[in-house]
Length: 158
Image (tube, rainbow, N blue to C red; front, side):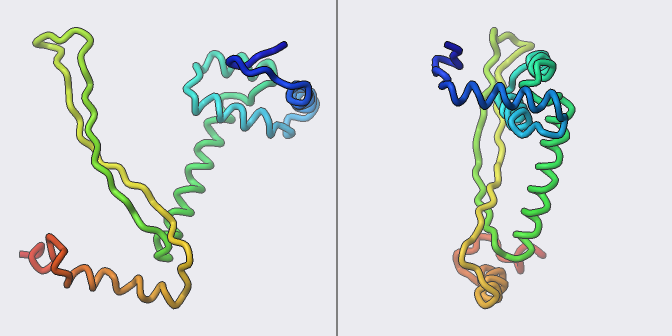
């Protein structure tokens, strides 16, 4: 029985894969399974040679198709994020993290390095209506006057 990392595939799963391969070989635009599988392979950092081999076997789409799909998804996600931010239906959460890159064999020329970075995550706000949105617009003014604000804008301009 064909296994995938120790998991036995059922007869139904095998049938779906075989039918997907057959349909893809007859119609190049019928490749939903191959496209999802190609994106999955890319997200798992599978080497390009393996993806090309699976593409030739009609198990995955071509590497260029995977790259085009990821670029399209990125543009779409960026557009949706910009729209959500403009509508004040998203909040941002920032996180600082540190990464230490250790040298395999530390020498004077090759020492370990340390990188500090900040990541941002956009979290959608649910239940925001036109009425609440006006309340959200005045939050910047409230934060400006808040005693909890460590750097008010008035002191930033000096």
